[in-house]
Length: 310
Image (tube, rainbow, N blue to C red; front, side, top):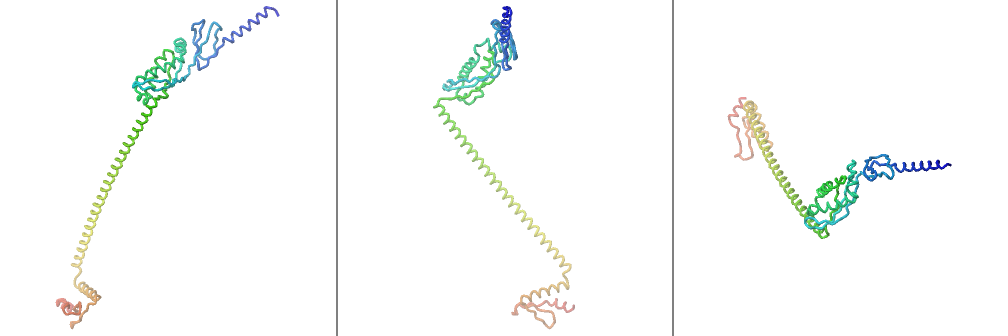
């Protein structure tokens, strides 16, 4: 093989190696900056690109949400209480070219800087608040840290996604005091609730008794009114009956009807061991209640004469 052929083969191999080494793949989760001879030259999105070896260099940055833990640190609150605090920060680098350039050229190691920024922000915001407020209003605390960090992180091309304060732990003696206070508040609230429930129950029983008394009174009134109306109806009926009897007697109880009634009375008297004395006048009787002469009841003469004439 001639020398020229060997040189061509070597050059071809070197060319293939150079081309292969210059091919770069950018994932959809990343954005990249290309520097040529140490200066920014282009912004690249996902896909396959080619960079000239030695002359150009590729810098890739992850643009997805990233979580960093802020380790526990001691913070002094406004009321001079020393407590420990830890948190979690979610952030991401912007997808545009300006954000990428800021994250590469405006800050040295933004991942480390984000953690340090979170620590200083927590100390600053918690130091301006009393422990009771910090411990009870986590939402407000998270929002305050989020707003403060967002302003600073924007200068680095970073967007703060979310801030979560995980734990705020006071000293043991303060925690014991807090537990006692909480227990006392709970006992107080329980007593208040019990008193309210008792009062409500008593009020309900009172109203129920009043309703029952009113019901009994209404029932008695209705019963009395019913009896009154019933007696009035009975009296009215009896009066009507008497009126009808009197009317019938005046119209129909005459002559033979009266004689028949006398015979009925006589019959009833005989049932009670009474006696009838038959006189010489025939069937015109005299009613005797007993054997003594003092109790003989003679029949009036007027009635006798009428009976004979008939």
